[in-house]
Length: 278
Image 1 (tube, rainbow, N blue to C red):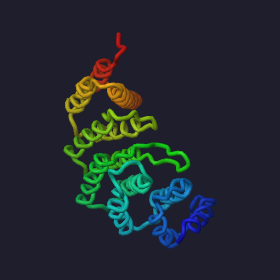
Image 2: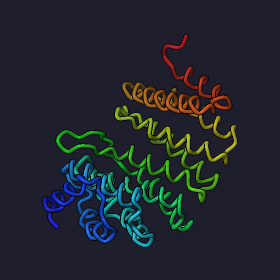
Image 3: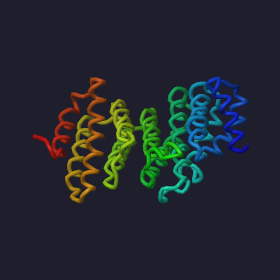
């Protein structure tokens, strides 16, 4: 199915908030998966992804065996890892919107388990690899819409952290991954990536599987990482990323009334990395 034909069908479906039958949804989904990395922002984001939200998560039209097949497809070299590691090009749209399907599949699993522990470990390994290898960290791309690969992968990691199958060692890996991603001295994140990564930390804490000391020790390590960077402007980029990230975590914990065990560690680290603390 050509993109123009698919776009027309999905526009029509959107008029009814994507209300459809299971058969109609499953008939359209192969073409949607093929066009998931379209450079047409409306088709990719407002139509294909919006339809996936409705059909996979809200309306629950997709059977478990089909969701498992979609998951395997999203993790392959033609989707999440399509042209991974290359300089910024259009391949990022395929990667970023493939990884954004994962939160939908994981959210359904959390309410009605259909994935095995092995499959969930495969998701974790894939996400860690994705964060390690993704080089295109653009947010909004003029004329093509959102890429947002880092934010989308953070959303997937957030949903994975909430899965019962994830154990303490998995959650610790997730904390270390968020730290590695946010401590990027090559750029300043400006499209709420720090907020999306911060949600992963809150979800990890909510599982009550890591000790307070473990989390506070992890918070404290940011001080050394920031202060060790002496180059300009890299040191300023890193300081900004970490400050925004830790502030996001601080206030999310405060709003949930969970701050008390972690407040001192966050305060001390934020003060230590501030150039203007008095």
